[in-house]
Image 1 (cartoon, rainbow, N blue to C red):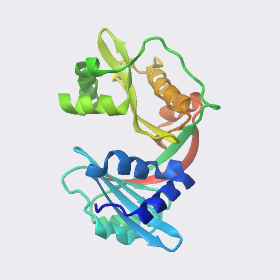
Image 2: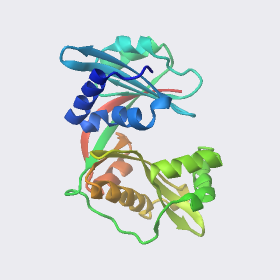
Image 3: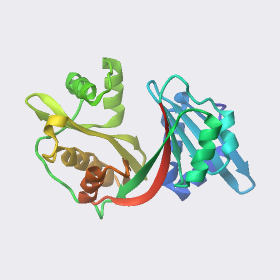
Length: 256
């Protein structure tokens, strides 16, 4: 990605300020992940009308397409050697099918809710066994990620814990539940990676760790946002129990 000129940066800032919940990934990645991203913008005299943002993670590629300029897809490289999630800011199925035609790969259309909560509507769920994870918890964190289905090494675990701000629940010296954040900006935090060991579900641990990281988000003055599959009713009800509400429904395209 070429260096941003001042006029484009002003346009990006204006776009973000107009709708932080939509453009938080763009702003966060430009500030904190600049070396791992690519972005192309479609601009007219009114400002940015569409953009595509590519985040090249070690294990997965995240693609955010905002606006309806599908030609932007031809100006970036979609990964062929790792899973890809294409985030659309619409629930228009006809538009998503056009995108699948362009990427020309086997893909699955998923529906997700963006759910949000602020300090006024947050309903805190206290549980004294919730623990803020630190570098001292790396081995246990690696173990729960392995149960989750993700093998990570020491360096990756260290990076995640330092950047992600995680909470966990320990039972018998084993972490059985985790939740963290992907993004932390003054206006919005994106909460995610909520996971509970299969043997310990139904005990309120998922609600407890989600409450802990959400508490930090809203205490900072930000809106907390998370993404949940529209068919995951237990998770949706859990989040509603903490005061989250459905903000919008969006389509994600998953390419294995």
